[in-house]
Amino acid sequence: MQNDKLRPLSRGGPHSAQSSAGFSRRDFFRTSAFGAVAGVLSGLSISDFAHAENSSSARTLLKGGTIVTMDPKLGDFVEGDVLIQGSRIAAVGRGLPAGDAKVISVANMIVSPGFIDTHRHLWAGQLRNSSPHGTEYLDLRDKCGPVYRPEDAYIGDTLSILSALDAGITTILDWSHIQNTPEHTDAVIHALQNGGIRAVFGYGWPMPGSIPWWENKQTRFPFDIRRLRKQYFASDDQLLTLALGATSINSAAGWYQTNTDKVRQEWDVAREVGARITVHTSGRGDIQAFSKQIKMGPDTTYVHCRHLSDEEFKLIADSGGTVSLCCSLDTLQGRAIPPIQQSLDHGIRPSLSVDEEMDAPNDMFTQMRLALTLQRGFLGDHEAKPEATFKKLVQVDQDSAPPDKFISARDALDFVTVQGARANGLLDKTGSLTPGKEADIVLLRKDRINVMPINDPVGAIVLAMDTGNVDSVFVGGVPRKLNGQLVGVDLKRVADDAIKSREYLLAKAKLPDPMAVKN
Ligand SMILES: [Zn+2]
Image 1 (spheres, protein in one colour):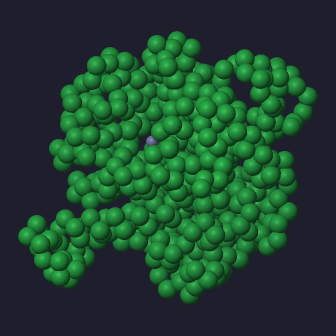
Image 2 (image 1 turned 180 degrees about the vertical axis):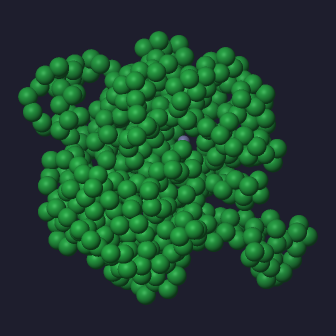
Image 3 (image 1 turned 90 degrees about the vertical axis):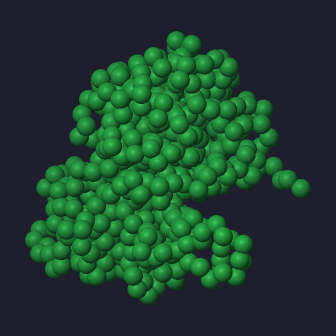
């Protein structure tokens, strides 16, 4: 892979520390995409917020918006204010005194906590939308993954980070199973650092090609996590925190039952360095077998949870673990209705996640709407209609599920805010507009035709809004999107780099270009 003749993706600076591709990887990571463009925008201006990045005392008052705090002790405000001081929320209420704060009118906005995605494979961003039948993703992942260069992982992550911020996602768990070499690891961490999003880096295994990762001594998984802790994650008081993406608990796709010692090493080293654990699991009986071998704990998020038994959900609940459900991906791939009701029945309020973008939409509005749709549809099928009534079609149509078990729009918003923060181990920092937490905030337009005249604000967010309603996004008080535009991002350059990377990957993997017209 390192001997390939590549065109540089970067157009930046003089080359030093040349890679075999003839350009400086270090230069690429420094100059690509971010930070080159000053934000000069109408309405809200970057200059209104420029102080926030460097000062813990500078204050900004978001005034006169509809405030949805997602903190039950605070409640909501039809018209209220949010005071930001430095990176944190200082106060929320009605008629807050401005003092020396910069006052920004948000009268046309709903002010909400930023959304949180608890599991996404960001590295495949440039392959997005290329699996329209729900099957192509297998070839894309398994053939492109092994030929990814560090710079491909960087641009994949960059695309996904930017679209996440654009859609109001302020925290994301990057489930990064593209650790083909330590240089790939460094590349995606640089992308996360440059992106300005709050992120959990889920250090996963490499895309192995023909060599199983555990036989490839170059990859260093999982023990390189010790280096990462020292080099990038010495402090937890930063936007990036650390998790281990562990081998799947799935006897069909994984191999933990015959490689228990290796899997135990993964969990041991994660706990040794104080990293959370995120793990894919599906298939009945696998969690039960796993629980007899490895201690389950509150430091773990279980992803998908398709076809788990009630006993297995109880094991997760009793351990204090959290879950991440993939409402779009699991249904689009025809695998299962995600177990929203089963989670709730065991006292687990789920978080939601996009998973990957090859065949699934990449915003949390879609995830929230699907969670509502699927939970209520599931109840209708499984609780309102005993088996006998299926034979009477008219009666089936007249039946309805018990509304007292319906989740509400507020539940769906809770899944992508408070529960997302909990599953990412960041509940003390984000997930609600609680004073003292980091100012991870989205401003959602009330005056667009798709939602006006609003009526129920939470209903408007969950039932009708989309990325077009996301006016402004703040991560730790720093504006990442203002007036509908990403701040400090050269989108033309991102697009150019993404196209070049995609063309390289598809050619190298000998896959057809999905842009080719199909008749
Ligand atoms: Zn996944």
